[in-house]
Length: 360
Image (cartoon, rainbow, N blue to C red; front, top):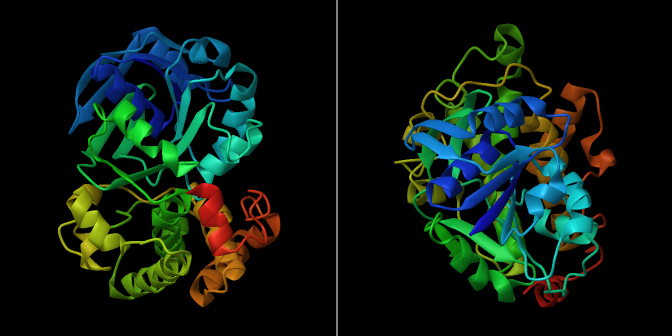
C-alpha cells in the first residue's frame, strides 16, 4: 500500500518507520520550515529506530513537495500537533483525490473535523474518508534528525473514528496490519474526548513550573513531576472530561484505566500510576514553559473541551481554572485566542443529538 506521512517530527518518523517496516511504500512530507529531519531521512534513504521497535526502514521519498508525497497515495497520515492540522489540510486540498483516506494522528480534539473543513469537504462528504485516532500509538522521542527511540508501541485501545463514523471500519481494515491496536469509537467526539493529553500535560507542567524554569527541564516529567497532589489535579480534570462524554452519550474511560490497557501503565491510579509507569520511564521534562504541553494542550485541547462543555451545559471549573492559570503564566489569553472551538469546527449551537446525527 502506498502511504503518505505528513510530518517529520517524533510521531511522523515513528509512523513512517513502522509503515515502511510493514512493507508500505512510504513517502514523507513536511514544510520547508522543518528541514532537518526531512533532509536526514532523504540522505539516509529511510528512518532508523531503536527501543521497542528497532532497525532501519526505507522511505521512497522525503521532501517538501506535498504533491509528490500524495501522488497515488492510498492512505495519508497527518501526524503532528494540533496546530499543524490546518496547515496540512490546506496544503493537501488541491491534491486530494476521490477514494483516498486521511487519518489525523492524533486528532487532538476535533482534528478530523478541522481537516475536513479546511480541505473544502462537508461533514457528510464521503468521497474522501477523513478520520482521526485519539492518540499517537507510540511513546517516542527523536535523538537526532531521522533517528528515533520508541519507548513503547501501544498494544491495544487506540480509538479511531471517521467523520462520519460509517467509514470507521474501512479505516481499521486499511491500517490493521500496522496497528492491530485500533478499536472503533462511536464518533469523533469520543476520540476527541478520550485524548487525555490536555488533562495530564498542563497539570504536571503548571505544578512544576518553577522547576522547569530553574533547571531547564532537567528532571523526569512523570517520575519526578507527578506526586499525590499533582495526581489529584489530573483526576479532577479527568472527571470533568468523563462528564462531558456522558452528556454526549459516549464512554470516556479514566485515563489510568486506559493506560493499563494500552501498556503504558501497570497501576490504574493518578499518582503512582503515572510516576511508576513503564511507558513513561526516562521521559524528560520540557526545557521551557513555552511548549506544546501548554500551547497545544491548553490552547487547543482544554479550550475545545471547555467550550464543548459549555455548549452541552456541563460545568468544568477545574478546566476553566487551568486555562486561566496557564494564560497568566504565559502572558497570553488561550481562551480568547480560540484556536479550536465549536465555532471554528462549524458545530456551534448544535445539541448533543444534532452532533450525533452529523458525526455518527
